Amino acid sequence: MAIAVEHEHLRTSPRDALHPAQALVALGALGWLALAGGASLGAGAIHAAAIGVHSEHRQAVIAFTVVAAIQLGFGAVALARPGRLLLALGALANVGIVAGWVLAKTNGISFVGGLGDTESPQLTDAMAAGLAVLAVLAVVAHLAQLGSAALLRRPILTGGTAVLVAALAVPGMLGAGGHAHAAGHDEPAAVGHHGEDAAAHGGDDVAADHVAAVVPPEPYDPTLPIDLGGVEGVTLQQQAAAENLIAVTLLRLPQFTDPAVAETMGFRSIGDGATGHEHYLNVVNMADDKLLDPDYPESLVYDTTVQPKKLVAAMFMMDAGTTLADVPDLGGKLTQWHIHDNLCFNGDGQVRGLTDAEGSCGGGLAKGDQQPMIHVWTERHPCGPFAALEGIAGGSIAEGETRLCDRAHGGH
Image (tube, rainbow, N blue to C red; front, side, top):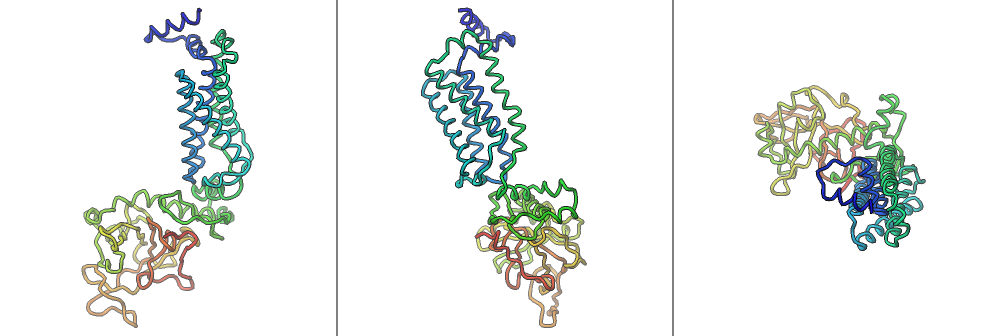
């Protein structure tokens, strides 16, 4: 009866500050629901913290987000004294989540990218599974009225236990950030994507000895997390550098989507739209000291086979006077620079022909600057994200090299 009186006082005086003991009494008055809510909230918080660890796999991110939302939502609902149907549905959802955890640890979940490899249980994920089990058991005990009277006679103890159960999420969330993947597809993709391994070892000479593990390569898709693994002989640092350039280009290049806007920023077409791809050059950016900067690209590439024309790539160029011998080691075997030494321009910067057999331009035309350049495609390309154009438009590569066509990461 004293509990009921206290609870009534809390209900009729909502503006009064609660003493901690009063808060525990109010929580403990929920009985098993307090434990179910605290456990589900804790499990959901751990799963929410684990989302970032799986950021290289979009399907895994979606799965962890859904699980976290379900558990956090059910935890809040349980503390609001829901009906039996909602409690049963929430318990079933947690049963399904625990079953998914068991499947992931024993066989892997092949239809969810990033969860296909089996892993040994780790403290953090085992803690989240344990909290989910506790939430289910608490709901069952509440529905069956098992020991409910005993819990209500000790509301402070019950409330304190619920708080401690929810607090288990704190070390669980911290542990989620250090979750270790099983050896296999997940690990090299994550390391290569963020470049952490090479950075941790502090330099080129160390990174050169750390070659990215050869795993089945993923086709390049700009709408998905970038993974350029699977090329033998590419170091982790080279893979990370190439992936990071793509990532920042995808982020910043859309500011030039509209050719009319690009023109206000100093870009001018060279008049090659009839080839299916039209290049816009910016002479100011070509003369600055910035390299591989998508805020200041030297050239933009638009697809003219669609209307309106579509921005599909940046073409970064080195300074005038440099040669293919001067290009940086951007991505090892993943990348290839080229030059255009066969194009003839008029005085307005328009392509008006090709060089003759002697490599000269006639009719008052002149060769353009022949500094090295490289494409970064913001859409799928059959020869990968750094492919040059084909045929005459492909330019010339360094002597002794083979034309790069990265079909391992190519997409249609």
